[in-house]
Length: 306
Image (tube, rainbow, N blue to C red; front, side):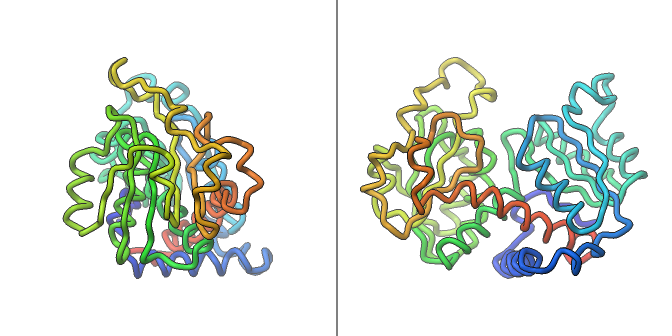
């Protein structure tokens, strides 16, 4: 059984193949692809709030001719409220559908339970662990916007400790040739040691920036993130998010070819005045998620991922 649980299941070749398939589905006539998942049923189980991830996955299935059954706010509105284990949820729901897309509050519980699923499971975000499909759509966006996935200087700002999108993206960038990182973050929200060690082993050049200006200078890609206040373990981790925000005044520092990405939602990390600038790619990034997830679900249900 092939489950999509971590970006470490993908390498540059598989990622490039997925990107090309996303481009095909993006440009194909709807009538030509509507049959691809005909007869398939996918369950979306979301134990944490979601807009882009849940709706893009569900839209992806429908656009390929499949059907969806959904449990939103499943932490409160399912048998999990009664104490049912996630392993049992997978056993039961897996008897009804062909695949499960899940967002869960515990990366550890998801990792343990996934082995009990009789159908493929896609990790749509797990606690402060990983968000593999976000990383896939992020590199898809970089490829479309910059034109390459190598020789990149990437600035990453915000919450590196709890930001699962950052964890997955950095692991994926570590597979690309000649990547350098500039990180700017609240001191209490630094990169987890295991991921920092992975960057070192992969030969990724990592520099700690001292300001937004220093982080943005010379960057090809800027990856801004939301401070994950809901995951703070203590008041000591609280910080002034405004210190890590990108303001309109910073655009003069950013190269013309650079692109600003954000997994969204934003809550003050990017000044809306930046939105009209061609370098602001975050809304295009969100749209790219539909096509990347179409490609992923299509290949997953056809047994083409391994």
